[in-house]
Picture 1 (cartoon, one colour):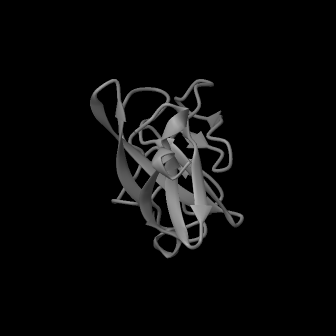
Picture 2 (tube, helix red, strand yellow; picture 1 turned 90 degrees about the vertical axis):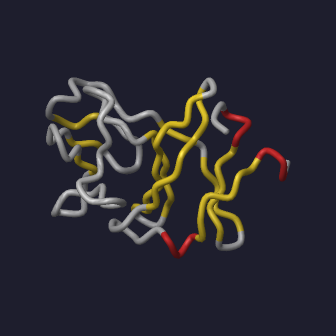
Length: 119
């Protein structure tokens, strides 16, 4: 089991409805940007690309939430996403949500579960 987990960061590095943590995942031999955020006490991870075009969401490194702290927002297109599901809520994402990652928080650390397709 432990070999299927990749350490991403300490749990304290991800602030509730605030600063997220950026990292990369390997997809078919390519390093792609990804991020983890905390919302309503739970961690959620996604590939860091808008559902509209492959542009990174954060408007400053690690800043993914809009000013209300209720939605994830694409800094380029203004598309809004549900933090807990990555579902498109409006804007140019046109119904295309974020691509989720399987993360686990264990003993104060956040891990990527590689057995679900990303390394």
